Amino acid sequence: MTNHKTVTVLAVLGLLFLWVPIVAIAANAFNGDKLLLEWGGFTTRWLHQTLRDAEFRTDLRNSFVCAVVVAALSVAVAFTAAVGRRGLRSGRLDRADDSLVLLRMVMPEVVVVMSIFLITRLLEIELGWALVVASQVVYCSAYAFLIINARMSQLSDVYENAARDLGARPHVVFARVTVPLMVPSILVAFLMTFTFSMDDVVSPTFLGGPDVTTLPTLIMGMIRHGVTADVNAVALLAMVFSLVPLFAALTLTGVRNLGAVGTDKRG
Amino acid sequence: MTTSEPLLTLEGVTKQYASASAPTLVDLDLTLDRGEFFSLIGSSGCGKTTTLKLVSGLEQPTSGRIVLDGVDISRVPSHKRPVHTVFQNYALFPHMSVADNIAFGLKQADVPRRSIRGKVDEAVEMVGLQASTHAKPGELSGGMQQRVALARALVLEPKILLLDEPLGALDLQLRHQMQMALKEIQRATGVTFLYVTHDQEEAFTMSDRIGFMHAGELVQVAPPTQMYHQPGNARVADFVGTANTFPVLSKDDATVVAEHFKLPAAEVAQVPDAAGTAAPDGWVVVVRPESLRVLGPASPRPCVCLEGTVADLSFKGSYTSVKVTLPSGDLVANADLRTATGLALGEPVRLGFDAQDAWVCPAVPAA
Image 1: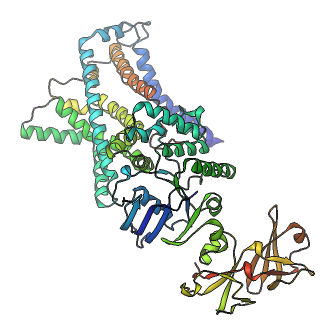
Image 2: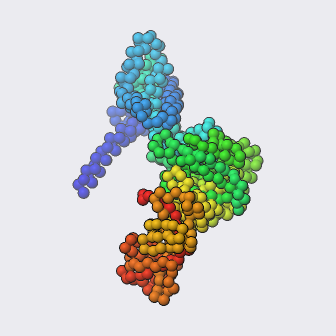
Image 3: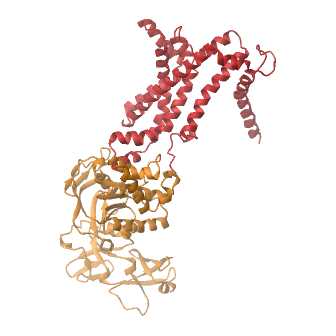
């Protein structure tokens, strides 16, 4: 029984740690007292102000477009790699590929980004969006590969064999059977890499140069001048704008159970 | 029924998988007649599914020829063969409705859109699934999925329909229903069926002819009754039903001698051309349980009489299976219910059979 209690207490503490700050941000975004010293009454002033703010709107759009591009590229790279891996007999080559994928995930982002930064200085490559996107794709595609390859390796060839047997040419088998069966995992990989890119601070800071600003860099910059109610409003909006597409995508595609990704959902 | 016009011929087909040490199929010769229901049976790993894959084109033979309707299709890719398959676990596309699954092959064949509708409707009606055309496979029961798989392949009017253990996942009652349904559909459509199963009863129920495979070789091809009563060797005898086997000690033109009895060679049925048949492991006498009678005191004395003790009685409904222990081993006899009531465990019992109910065929090395 005591065990039970300890687990419950720990669980509650854990949930509090996760949710209290988020609730606090949401609450303070509506706080009338700008310096957040006390509850200054309910107001939507900060939200209105933020939504009208040109810098916020530009940075939000920048982050969103960048995240979509990164997610699309990562998924494309990962899907192509998974298709290629499927044709590979297990051996030294695919073990080497596994290590490379793992390396891209465990290597601290700061190290990867720093090394790219140093190379650009050496070769006098101009900093900017292209480098930000490229560096994010480097590690995002590794996560995407992990998700997509997990599904791909479980994908039994019976459906593809059935399609061939029914007279489908190889490219039709791929387009009408292989890809549709992979859609749930592709979607999850897309959403995950989208989120990774959306809240990345390191790449834009090092590789973006003076012209690149994103939502995370905006928030970082604001915090430097002190935490005020309008920072909370920006954070709340950032949260809303990254969660809405996620739930929209899940609802529209009918993928309700992320746990089912990678498994064969046949009855 | 069959018109014994050859439709499919496998000539000396050998299949060696890169990963396997021994070939899966060895020099296989097989001919299927147009319109027949042919079953391949054998235990798992005997090569029956590989044979099916070679015919469908999902695998290529290492050597040998596959001729369909006069055309060598050995090197024709799967999607260009007029042969379609009902797979073991149905392999219905989970992301398409029943109607789309059935239409899939028609679209590949560039059938005009208007006639696709009609053909799909016809196929759905044939398998009785009018109510479920818009359902996804995951929403259907196993039996219904099986019907969709059947419709999806038959709608393409294949020259041969291949069926790979299609009823394996269904429960017994449904399996019996589907056996009848398959037989009817086969007769109605006249399509040649090549059916693979490890269930000999299933093969007996539906087939015109059966091929028994073992270790990549075709051991015997025969109609069901012949395979049951005149098995090609002891392994076939054992696979297609319960078999009491007695090793033959010696055999000449006059008598067949086993440990406990002698049979007049003229009365015993034997593998035709017995003299020319190789039997490196010797010969056995095969007697089916239904030919082995439990003898009462007043019973007429049959050709062969054996004495043992009752080791087990199992009630099977219309008869009782009696296991009898002899000094040389156990036998199984089917006793009618009245005879069985007179038997008790551990009591002595006399069994008998007639020479014409015995069958002599080559023995096989013990597994």
